[in-house]
Amino acid sequence: MTAVFVTATGTDIGKTFVTRGLIGHFIACDRRVDALKPVVSGFDEREAEGSDPGLLLAALGRDTTPKEIARVAPWRFAAPLSPHIAARRENRTIDFAKLVDFSRDEIAHRADVLLIEGAGGIMVPLAGRHTVLDWMAELRLPLLLVTGSYLGTISHTLSALDVLERRALKTAAVVVSETPGSPVRLDETVESIAEFTATPVIALPRLPVATFDHPAFEKIATTL
Figure (tube, rainbow, N blue to C red):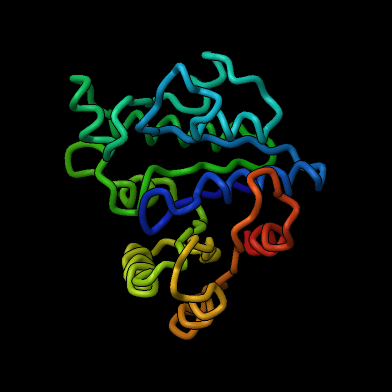
């Protein structure tokens, strides 16, 4: 079985787009695939189909029912903020131990491919002093680090890679998701990051929303 954690250097970078693309790729390869977004903020049940969990369910070919949403994303919060702040606004907390146990149980019971999408960037707080980094360290899964091609992304990406390496986490690939309107070309960003790491760095051009047959997704899959 292949289990992978999809993380990023920040929020709204392209984690869900990458996860959806990989779902499409694995389905096309006749693999049994599932995806989870255990923690999500900015969730509005009235617009569930357009939420990250809803988009993952659509890619999986499943209906966006309350039961399916709850299965894919057990920890959902309304405010579009860091999960620990969003939870606090609802007088709730994320039980870190339960989050880890939930993730491990899902990993253990998947027969083929499981994609777990994180929340925000690698250092986003979840509860107490626990961050997404701590969550990933508990699971010890190979990581996909999604970043953008915006000005400043090279420093952000290399900093993230350094932190992940210090925690002895394996980054299978860096996926550079093209940032619209960036003054830096996508190929320049990829080449610059690749100069500083042995980790594969893969360019993902800005694609139409429904396009998931781009060769970049096959390249990403081969690193897993």
